[in-house]
Length: 66
Image (cartoon, rainbow, N blue to C red; front, side):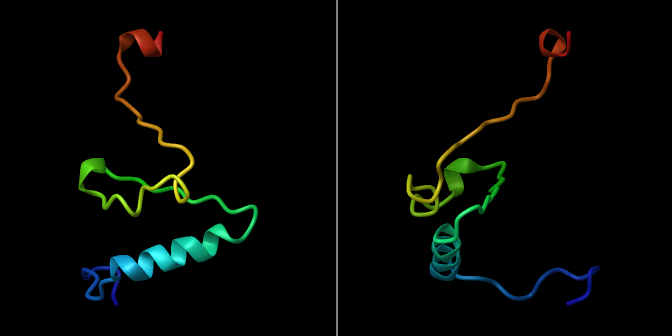
């Protein structure tokens, strides 16, 4: 796959969940999942045994900056 071309292979949700679960068995691992559309994510991906912390970042405003 070229860096300039879109990816042509897709990963199934089941494969992704299996990879995440196998990573969770290893201690000292940190996985960061980012999205602009959290409601579009499958609930199986966001269950409590896979995601320990959910953090929403907002755009900074003047009060936050000062």
